[in-house]
Length: 143
Image 1 (cartoon, rainbow, N blue to C red):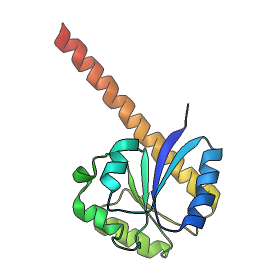
Image 2 (cartoon, rainbow, N blue to C red; image 1 turned 45 degrees about the vertical axis):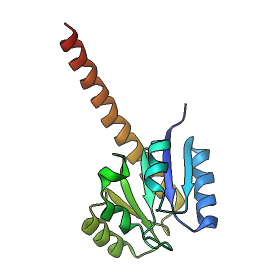
Image 3 (cartoon, rainbow, N blue to C red; image 1 turned 30 degrees about the vertical axis):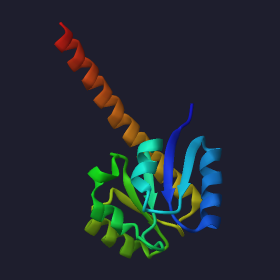
Image 4 (cartoon, helix red, strand yellow; image 1 turned 60 degrees about the horizontal axis):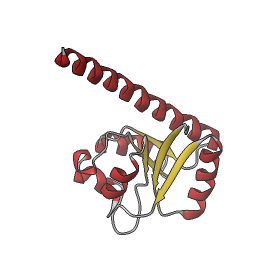
């Protein structure tokens, strides 16, 4: 069983391959996508536990995802800004856009992994509670 699924939307292939390797070593599935244009299709297909989104990409920036709206994206996974910007700038942008969090690409790999794991754990805990609530509701309705 995998530890969780992460979708990384970024166009820096070297950085991504290194991060993907480290995450896979921790038992985390990793999907890398280099375009925001087809992102809703990819999100629905893989149902990630967390989405790391680069702010500055060619064609459409990560902030375009927030402009299109989370509902249109088709996921309740945490949207995390992932950029090489300074931490204070990322914090400001995350707040402005309504992101669930932010991480700098310059952080230590162990810190990045730990933060990703915490987002995965949180989402899985929320889903377990929702599934439990849905089961109780179905049981009450059936009786």
